[in-house]
Length: 128
Image (tube, rainbow, N blue to C red):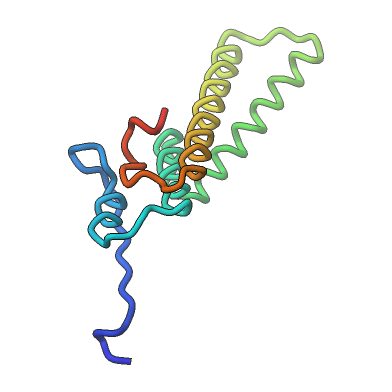
């Protein structure tokens, strides 16, 4: 196979000044329509940014740790023990993070169901 006929893949992350991701720009320049995979990648990027995660594995760890922490707080409440002020604040923070992740997932689901998926799917107007 010659060098000319070999497929080429470009992976780029970043945000353009107009709010589009480089993935949006690259997809448009290739003349292809956005796919559900592209939308899921954007959702994952947004969840990583929300949680301050380095990568998908780190995001999974952060979510798992948050679930364990929420379970411990819930067990304490179910046992009739009052949460300390810092525990109550953390519980509210965990609830807000969970709601934000669910909102990102819901936006991803809406975009994935569109036919065609908008070329500007990475624009903030589509996301919470």
